[in-house]
Image (cartoon, rainbow, N blue to C red; front, side, top):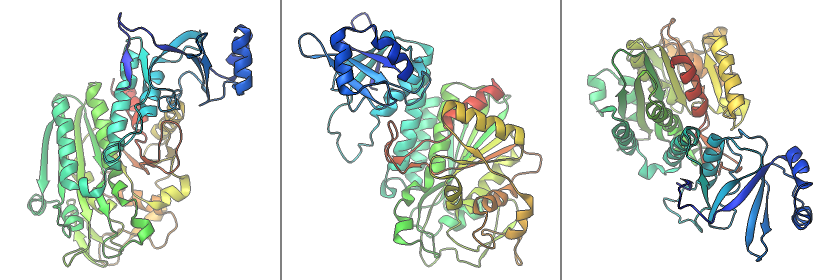
Length: 458
C-alpha cells in the first residue's frame, strides 16, 4: 500500500495543496509573492491532473500544488504517485478538502502497475492520511480493483481455468466463503453440458467455480462471471489481431470476483453465490463445431452458428444454475460482444435489465461515481433473429446488426421471466492510458454495483 495512516511518529511529509481552477484563483492572491510568481512561471492554474513543485527556502522540495476536477473525483490524485519525487506526502489544510475515500482510492490507483514480469523503474510516492472509515473504504475499493486488473493482465499461460479457480479459492479463504468446483467430465455428470462443450478441446480442463458466503436466512445474491481464459475463436478461428488480447476474455470473471470481494469485505447482509464457468476455447479434434446442437442445463438446445460466440454458451449453464436458487437478484458480467464496444466504446459498459427503473438508477449512480455504464434495450422483436430451425435458439444472429442485444436476448432465455437480472457487457480493458488507468486490464462497474447493492440490501 502506498497510502499509510498518520501516527504520532509521522513527520517530515511534504504538503500537497489541492485546488481546482476557481479555488486556485482565490488562493493565489493569498500566497507569498515568490510562490505566486513561481506558479505563474510554471503555468499552473489548477487544471485537473496537473501539479507544480514549489521549492522551499533551502532549495529542496517545499510543497506541491495539485489540480483536480472536484473533491469526490475517484482519480483526483492519480497523476501524482508515479510522477512526484519518491518520499512521503500529506494533504495540506490549505486549499480544497479532498474527500478521504477519493484521496485514498485515487492515490492507490495512481500507484498501480502490473509488475509481475517487469520490475518498476522506481517506487511510487507515499501519501499519509488521517485514519477514517472513508479512507479505509477507498483502500478497500483500490485493493479489489488492483486484484481485478492483475487477473486480467496475467497472460493466459499463467491464468488458465485452474489458476482462475485458485484465485477464487484464495478470495474465498480471505473472507470465510465456501469454495468448490466441478472439473472436466464431471460437468457432464452434474448436468453442465454447455460449459463442457466449449472447454473440452483444451488440454486445461473446463470447470464451474462456485463460492458461497453469508447467512442462510439472508436474501440470495448471485454473481456470474464469464471466465474464458483464452479465446482462439475455436474452429471459427480469430485472426491474429483479434486474438492478441484474448487473455482478457475472462475479464467478466475477474470483475465478478472483484465485486464479490467487496460484498464480503463490507459484510453486506446477503447470501452470496458466485459462479464462474472457466474454460479455454481451443482447437483440437474434439472441439465443438459450427452446426453442432448442444443441450444445456435448462434443457434448451443451442445450435452453434459460430464457435467464437462461446461466452453466451458457457453462461447459459451458469445462469440456469443460478436461477434454480431463486435469488433476489442475478448479476452477470461478461466481455461478451464486440458489438457493445462498437456501440459504446471501451469506457462505457453496456447494461441490460428487465426493469427500466433499475437501469436508470444504475446509469445515474454510475455517472455520479464516475464508474459508468449505459442502458441498452432487451428488444424482444429481435428474438426472431436468434431462432433456430433445428434447435431452440442459435448462438449468433442473422447478421451483425444489434449484436450486443442479440447476445443479451440469448442469455435471457436462461433466466426465468420473473427473475430480477442485470447483464453487463464490458470491455475490462483500458485501450488508452489516463491517470490511474494504465493501458491493460480494468475493473469496470464494480464500484457502482457495490453502491447499488448497498442501497438495495442495506
